[in-house]
Length: 261
Length: 266
Image 1 (cartoon, each protein chain N blue to C red):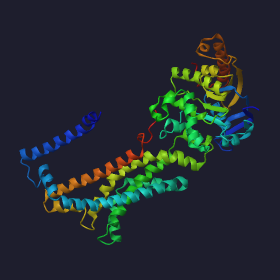
Image 2: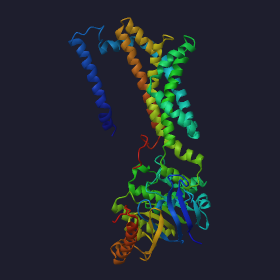
Image 3: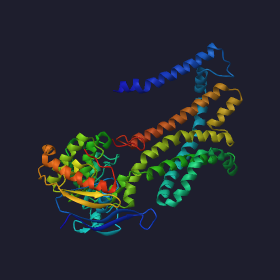
Image 4: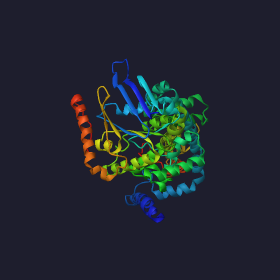
């Protein structure tokens, strides 16, 4: 059973990855590609090991910004979803606005935030992540609370349940898978936002800064090593979101809208 | 005391507005305790609306509705009836047993008492081994059995059902009909049952209430008189066909009058 899982789920992408890196390495050697154009994976790997401490330090800076923004954004997003459910009029104003804002690259706002705070402050970046995560969580959780099965509501009414009980027994459990879907989108997005935010000035300590500064000074392999660090960070955030979902939804409730049959 | 007493009920949706719809006009219906009554008619005849009025999920525009001798609203608050719909409406995040226990939970029963009752109900619908399953692990027919067990969990005297077998295949449907009859006989439950299948209405009911649309009203009430011990042989009985013909003709009158469609002839 376990072996079958390994061969079926783990093996294909692992083999594909190895083949890809192998082809890359081979291409660099065979076509004699110059290091200023493309460095081979082996060089990146050795720089990654050499600079592990520095990369880890940069990952911690960007990771902390992403994590704090993720937690705050998720908390505000969930809180606002409940407010919108309670005050329907507010919903009609905020929801279209949220969706519209979600469609534009609002992380450029970080330039504005940078002007508001001290130059070495991490606050603008965290604020930016918070904002991006907030909208993703809000849009999804608000829908989860609202789009409940009409039969469920009628049943609850037939049990003489009021709005509060319906919220507790129907709306909140219904919104849980929506929340985790939002979290799985927001977790890697928070990492991306955290280091894209670093491009707009401020302290030169995060992954985003290190990638640009290394590439700018022709330290291509180092730059790529930081890119690898960024990939690991994004992946870690996603996996944590998936793990939290797996732990908190026993019985394997799946994607939103899944039918019971 | 009647189980259900509907007197001169009118229901107008969007009353007073341009898009007002007369869903029910001058409806009178009395259901006696232990009776099985089906409401049948083409789409838009108000049969589901009538059921929801009895359940107090809707309020009548005028007229009165008594359930177990009390106003429908009080009966709902006292959870005097159980209800089942075309969609099983099981909560997919709860196990089968906890679905059945939900109405009891809302009544404030303690856990041990709830457990005992859900076990009893699962035995009743022959799903004793499925207490810990999640709803999506069950077939459509099994899910509907759980929904019936849940509707009967607090031992209500009255069961209100809105096309509960409408989404099932024919074989499962006939099987469920026989099981429902057995369960109702054992628990002496009164049933008001909405359907658009003529054989289903005839097989299950003591009386079939024929309704017509625009505006929704009762046009005929047909006594079935097939006795109380019905089984699969009943379906091949000449008397059974006789009653099917009677209901069909009553509905044909409705159809001629209203030019409506939507009745299943199987």
